[in-house]
Image (cartoon, rainbow, N blue to C red; front, side, top):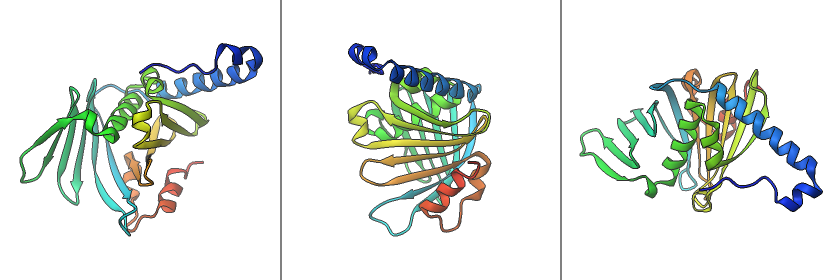
Length: 214
């Protein structure tokens, strides 16, 4: 996977202001991402509502996301059922209560690859990694409320995951919204906001929570 140039050489000559704006935006995003970095292991509670086209009501789970260092990520679900998904060494291990563990290649789970790239890059403050995997746009400033919109650079991944929107304030990511290419949507409330998951969440109510600081 290679970094894509902001503009071609010809475009740089004819529209220098566009290149300068893109470079400035990139630098601003890198500064913000760097402020989010923290040492491993880093853990944060989450509550997720997953809106599927085939269901009338969202699926809601809650638990803990943990970055264990390097490319090791753990997503532990405590409610309504216990389940742990661990990513390490390019493999995913899924453990459900009362069942044998199942292991498969991370390449077979684009959503988990995107979660790994985005979550690990954010928690480690690695803007370079995030920029390798995504085109990044930012609104707001690191000193207040902000939003990062990530779109996958890899065309194969983009066929599954259309975009990720991360809302935060200061050094604290508040929400992560993963929009899948087929229209399904997962909204994760992170950190203290996880306790505010409504009993009957809707897309609008959760997006209002995510943007509450704006």
